[in-house]
Image (tube, rainbow, N blue to C red; front, side):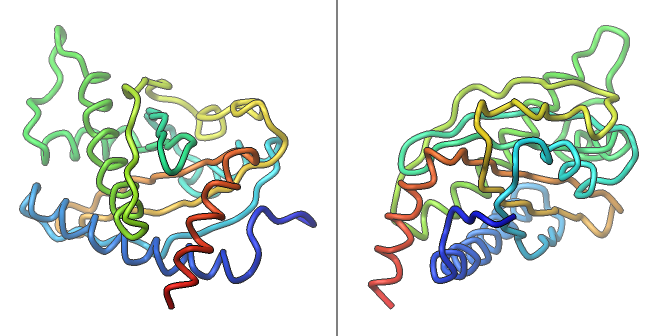
Length: 203
């Protein structure tokens, strides 16, 4: 990709902030779930909209998945995708205290709560590093038992470029993983760049 939405200094600052934020998120989730939660080093990239389905598949693998999305707003604006394999969704639901879905159950509602918890912990951790506030819209179900490439359409953000931050959660004791992908369209990255420049001035 020839065009970048953040310069090198801003990208390095976002990496540092995301690392700290993810550490806080892992600690927060560990307290909630009573299990050690490992988070990967966040990956940051500028992505062409046409390559978003490929990106999701590369992050989560070739299996079938369940996915939900949340819009976030305030100091940072964009959307967060939470993607979980079908087997891991059931395990994570159990970890969060949900009963096993029965014929009259609503596994979609469980997934929405899982997505809200993960996105709130991670993006909230990033926002705190900026001493900024963000809010969330209601989570929306993308679907269950989907091919990974179907989680997001190439025109999902209505733009040609997006800033992507991807992180993987793993609960080792239960052999489960989930992925969070933060997408910020080109027109919203300027606000993030201002926050990053302000952060750099404090170093």
